Length: 116
Length: 113
Image (cartoon, rainbow over all chains, first blue to last red; front, side):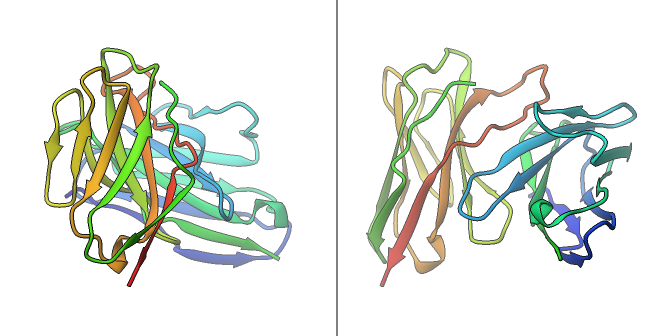
């Protein structure tokens, strides 16, 4: 099946720094990728839709200047958490749509961010 | 996307079939039923989907009622590795919003030896 890879899987950073998380579709092209955030014992919450070659679409309540999304190629989207604070500590998950085949969505392994 | 209702948790015995219910009484005619599961600290994994006919694959079976207002995911022989949160989602398969999935609370399934 299609594979979506995230990097890093775990990251610890100091408060005030920025962290970049990568999401790659390894064997298919993804014009659209999605970024989710998940707090402990809660469900996934969609943050934004990442569109290749254009600006991301953010869900209500998600600060676009804090969570910068770049989708520069058909296989890579990045999420940068700027000026991270402890409340940004969470599990971040991306998904990508294999538009050329089944059109189904596949998820990355997730990236756990801990802000000290 | 139509809202779904799932029990928050359920236990099942290893080796037995696990039947996971999902209510989606407001489902539209062009909406599919999708099931994903999330094992602890991992990304969601696609299990199966269907429109109105029952479906089966190597992981599970999906039974959709005739009126499509509810469905059941069946894990035929649950193993300890099936312990996870199972999400039932209904959505249009192709949509302008780009196939985004909205997750509900899911069912936390614990398979016991």
